[in-house]
Length: 170
Image (tube, rainbow, N blue to C red; front, side, top):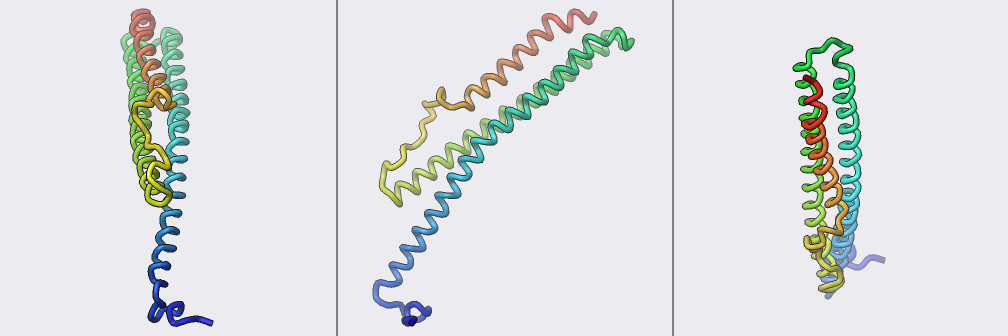
């Protein structure tokens, strides 16, 4: 049997506050689940970006090396072959820059979601339930090493090209 408060009419004393509290808790729980889902997605995206970069870099560098090895056989002038190698290296550099940008944006988004997670748990569970992320822990983030790998691989690629491949194409 429904009371007037349950049917949507005049609320029973204290019932409105309880309903708001229950709805607020349910909303907070759903928001918390969403935040955790987004944190998980941001973590997975870094691996996806690295896989895309590795695929593009491997394919393009392979094309540059193929051009280096076969340009004489194909009767391509050395200047054109050098231009092709440089163009391919620029494409790899652009892919690397785009990947680095996506990883940095993902890390910033992760920090934002983690801070929001801490806000929700501070309010719903109690202050200090979850420690806020500290950018000082940068050395523990795998994104740091992914970025270092990409940057070092780009520098190495350009040094090797400038030192060995391009001078040999004269």
